[in-house]
Length: 192
Image (cartoon, rainbow, N blue to C red; front, side):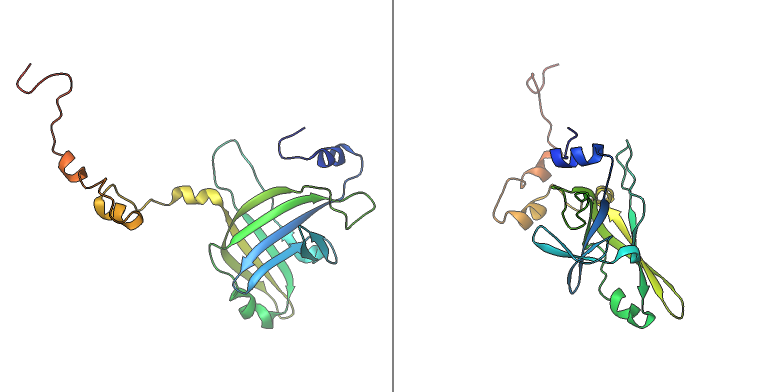
């Protein structure tokens, strides 16, 4: 069995008939949004996921052998252009996005095979708009969690920095005196 796959998922992947779908979770300013790539509502993990069919598209989810942050783009089409400002006002950089790959039992478009795979997880970045007079498409760029590796750590080995987390701790109060300290290892001062 492959890591992360249940025996039911493994059996479904090897069967001749697949019923795949994508579940997309996103947190916005007004709350959480759960969508899926089919039609009508489904329930998974005691949460209702709204099906919006072809109005939702997910760019290809890439994986590689290098440790590299690879993003994904979610597109939602069919928007009324008058609602764009309200929709864009709900998006903030850094809010979480998770995409799941699910399989349904053949012949049962509402029965999800346990346990769907988390295909991608990251954070919202920037939305872009492609609008006409009648409809609009909002594309939301999302960045992988690995982008946090590129952010510089703004911490130092100083008493002041240590006090931010551990008030009263004197463990780093001797760091300043150590930088000019001469340490004699295995001999005494004056010996050659």
